[in-house]
Every structure is written in structure tokens, then in C-alpha cells.
Image (cartoon, rainbow, N blue to C red):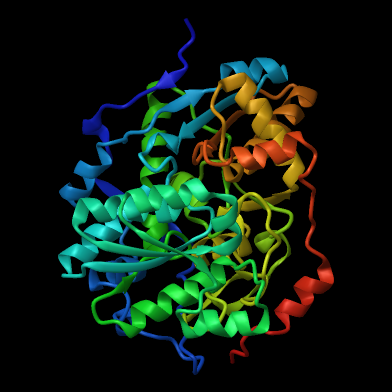
Length: 450
């Protein structure tokens, strides 16, 4: 029989996270304060524990994973690496397709990889309450779940359009003890400011971040936790790529191309960064971030300093951005509806060291259905973006006869997204390519730096 699942033992869960900063040719650009001057770690101490701040600014290649974190990881890690034999056959491609399946976590996605770490470090710092935001619900679910593991109360500001599209994600968070609010709310100054401009605002990740940051900054008993974008979040996610490299070694293979969905960057960074270490050492591996055409941050955004939230409460970060007041359309990939990208991902893209491609919504669902009918797993809409790009590359291999090895991160299952699939089957979904004039208008509001 052909081997389908490549498995690791629990003893092979990584003992260290990989920090891509150590292998970047240029040091990351610093975050800036409201005055345009670089800020130090102390500026973040109002909402983050010092242990996470140290990881945020570290240039050490390896960061030890605490044993209590690895013990929680054992609930679902190591996650399986699959060879997609059935999809290869359906496509008639000479390419070999592999995928890492992160949907085996209790929350159904890759997000607990950092939620566990953030909850642990906050508990060690004496914090017993966390405020956060969530788009599609995977991050909120993950933090709610691990909050129970470490005795931490969790409040989640959930983007309103996702709150309405995904009621069962909300129910999951409540089952794990979290309080969930549809953002924008009237409980924060940031939320009230948005509602005053647009009482029917669908919300955005930037708005929800503003609300969560405001709450954390205004309460001594509360810290803030973020599910993507920041350096320490991408660091924690590298367990995905580190495990995948061990699994490829077991079968004597190695990817020519690595694909992952990209919204804020944790999904892509987790899968691709460990392979960037090999690229930096001279290995010709291509790393491809896949984003929605309706929220084309890397492919059509501007590389500039911008706020990570909508109201301007966060430090300024150098990133690809569509403008902090950008409100994306209500596409059914809530985890990818963010105006900016990780500073690390953005810098690597700006320096030509990684690639990016934008794909339309209908084509992603078409790819997800084809994958499900071949491999059996129904993917999350976010994951469908990577699947679309992989299928496109596999078809190019069919035309050229190249037998490339393609690897992608299947970052979560779509069991709570069946309403979106229903709309796809009934023809109610439509493509939305964000108009250039709307992007230009949002970019006019970028902070003036220097």
C-alpha cells in the first residue's frame, strides 16, 4: 500500500520554536510610537507579559518551549502529514501533493499552537483575565479552550459579520467559558466611535483589535492576546513547519514549493518559516502566501508604517497594508479579512524572499469541494485559498510534465462553515475584487512617519 499518513511520536513534538529573525538578511524594522520614534519593550508591558515581549524582540534562532506547553500540545500534536494520493489522481498531475492537517486540534485549527503559549506565559505573570478579538472564530475558540487549561477568564470581541455567519463558533467559545461580544460594541470608546459613523458596521479585525486593546490597557487585571501578526505569535506556530520537516525526512522527500493561506501571517509563518531557514542556507524552496482577491494586502497593499488596529491604539508597524480603516467585504474566509500583514512576512516579501498570490472567492470554494471529494476532509474557507493555489500549480505541472513536490498547510476543518458551502452550492456566493480607488482612499489615511 502507498503511505498516506506520515506520523510522528509524541516524543517528537518540537522542544524549541524557530525564530526566523535569526536568518533574515536584514534586521526587522522597529515598531514606532505615536511620535514616530522607535519604542522599547516597556511600551508593550501594559498589555503583554514581559516573557512574550522578550520573544517579540528576540533575534535568537531557537526559543525553548516550556514543558507545560508541550504537555498541552500532546492533546493533538504532532499533527499528521498526508500525501494527497487521491487528489493527485483526480488532477492527473505528476506533482506530489502533501498537506499538514491542523484541523485535528480541539478547536479545529492551527490557532491553539500560540493560544497555549500565550495563556501559559500570562498565567506565569499572574494574569487571570485576557481580552482578544476573533475574525472567523478559530482564534477565539482556541483562546477560550486553553483559558480553561490555565485558569484564565477570556472575553472575545468577534467581528460582527462572523458573529452572525458562524453562530456555532460563538457557541464553542461559550462552551469553553468565554464571553463573546459582536464587534463593534457600545462597551468601548473605539466601538462607540465606529458605531457613530456607521450604526450598521459589519466590523473588521482592525476594529475588534481596537476594542480588545482598549479594554486590556484600561484594566490592571487584564492583558491582551493576539492570534496572528506579531512576531511571538508566528514564532509559536513554527511547530507546524518543524514537524513537517521531520515528516518529510521520514519519507525521503522535500517540497519544491510551500503554500499557506495568509491573512495576518501566523498560518503562513508557521508552515513556511522553518523552510525559510533552508532557503537562507541555499536550498531552492519557494514559499508562497495565498490571500483573497477581496483583501489583497501583500499583492496590492502599500509597504508602510501603519496601525495594527482601526482606531490607532497599537504601535506603528512597517507592513503591507490596505489602510487601518479598511473594512473588507463580508467574504466567507473571516480569518483572512485583515487590513495588514505580519511585519516579518511583509519584510520578507518586500525583499523578494517569499512570494504571494491572490485568489478569488468562488475559485477557492471550487478547490475546497474538489479537495473534499478526493481526500474526504472538508477544509475551512481560509485553507481553500492554499488548496486553490496548489491545484493551480499541480495543473501547471501536468502541462509541463514537471514532478514537483508541493506542500500546503491545511490549517483547519470547515465543519462550522457549512453555511458558506451552502451559499456556494446555491450560487449565492460572488467574487469581489476590491476596487483600486477604495484601496487608494484608505491608503491616504496612513500615518505620516518621518
